[in-house]
Image (cartoon, rainbow, N blue to C red):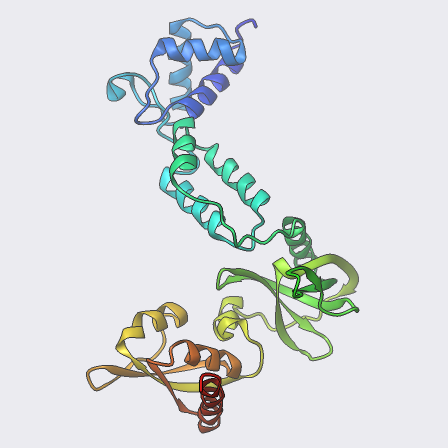
Length: 322
């Protein structure tokens, strides 16, 4: 291929992006050889120096030869290595992202780094995530939901559940209809928050269990704007139902867990050396589930009616082990 000034600058950038990093600088001869073998671009050393200078003038950070001591490498990347590794691990650990889509996303992120980083990641970082959901419509569903929210139109969809053969089947014969408002990520799952016109209140649905989503011509009902994560925070484990104010007595051992779950704004009142009181807003079923998880370290103080229900739940649970 004949030398082309514009083409050679782009090719130099791509070569450095793929084959160089701080631990793998490239000599001038190596860059020139890669340009010829991969892109058919044949240039002289002085042209390479000119291309490197032009890349720096464009704001792309390429090391000076004297800095690298052994050659040149690309210092400036769209995403830094720690950012890429964090995002790759989050995507891999997210159970709701199907394996194929997860792998595709990780490969795209790794392409922002050198081939040496890509190889290190694949060899060292993760094992197969056996809890991945395999809803291959997931990203198409996400796009449809985003468009429906943006266009302010209602949707219809099938909502799925598992049967005893571990197969996803329709939860009911009739499709759900919803006024969609927000997409949120909570408790390692992605949810759609919307309103069922029949009940005239917000509810939420797991996106990985939504299938056959369709946009309708019906416009959504306007609701008062609110923070979707504030809504989700008050739906412990995403249980629905009316919210109530609950006072809990907790052991100091779960103080970190409570702050992680509810945020630093929750009130903390010390009770003796080992306990504290806090008050939260959440659904009844969510609080019961929380109290069951921390039964050794948590006590529902009030409301009294919820405390009585917790006694019934624990009594029934104990009978199973008698």
